[in-house]
View 1: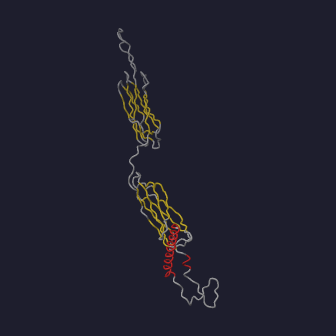
View 2 (view 1 turned 120 degrees about the vertical axis):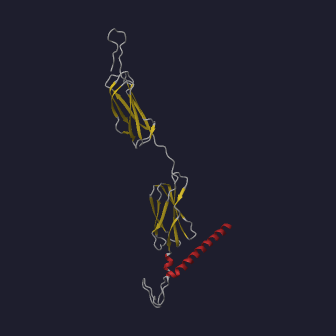
View 3 (view 1 turned 45 degrees about the vertical axis):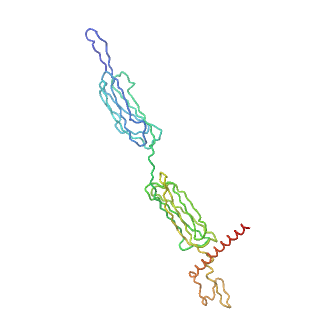
Length: 322
């Protein structure tokens, strides 16, 4: 719009031409934002000219990982000199947006009139995407539970294979970090325990891990009760303290085959020749009760074992002194 003033009658003034001049600004008021956050842009259009602007419209366009919510455009109509209009536009940053990237908003205003200048009809704002600052680490200790199992019912012999498993469960509602399992196999003899170790890493709340393995019993293994023990240890997220499941043990019995076989001797009747697998004279001699005499034989075996061990130590000392 333009105006001509003081042109009727005698010419005593100047010719004055007036135009509208739209100016736009846009900002969200922040420099950085995290993925998944909501954001709001404020856009303002102002008529800086000396004439009214007609049919004014305002629109926003976006770039980058930002999804706007309607509306993002407005039909304003006439806008007088010095008059302003302000609007807000909301949206959400993509939760999968990468750090160190950015998104932007550009505002554009138009009018049906010729303007004094169109250089300020648009404006832009850019916001950087950053990862959220890490919060304080959880210091709560996890609740670890452990169970130990083997497949031996009554007993096994040297040379047999024992199937075993260790199950670790995180019973707490928060993660267990750097979980490791320590174990050992020992017996009631002066045999050094055999150590075992597994590193499980982190366990989520409610997660269970089962470790399955075999124990091969060598020939010549001493008889007696063997103890398979295990303990699970984990730490909190902060890592200052550790939590233990406590030691849990599963036992199994090893019997010596050769001792049990000698408890049933073959007794021959006079003037009789046995056939293969035949026991003669069984009606004349009562059989030996295995359960009755087995503890005595095992006790004698243990005494012999310790006697041989003491003799070896004595021989070693004599060899060192000489």
